[in-house]
Image 1 (cartoon, rainbow, N blue to C red):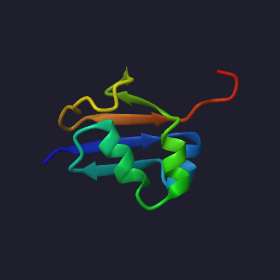
Image 2 (image 1 turned 60 degrees about the vertical axis):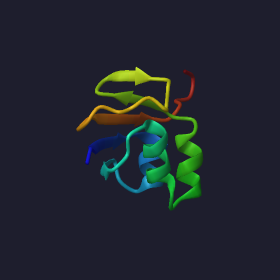
Image 3 (image 1 turned 135 degrees about the vertical axis):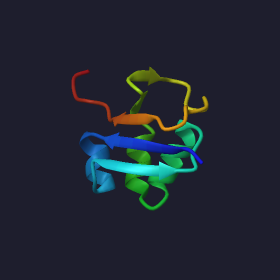
Image 4 (image 1 turned 90 degrees about the vertical axis):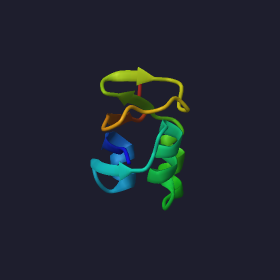
Length: 81
């Protein structure tokens, strides 16, 4: 089973309550966002607006398969940019 290391920044980290997490059993960014946001509606709303970087590469296709043992950075939109 694949494990994804997640780093959350800004409002995403604040809503999640931590800046880092390990998530098992997800294969797409959509699945990751669902797993992270399942218990908190505010976090789910933030994640819908976030940018996702997989092993340093920006990913726009949230349904693409994640590589095994990858790191995902979750960045919310920033004011002014």
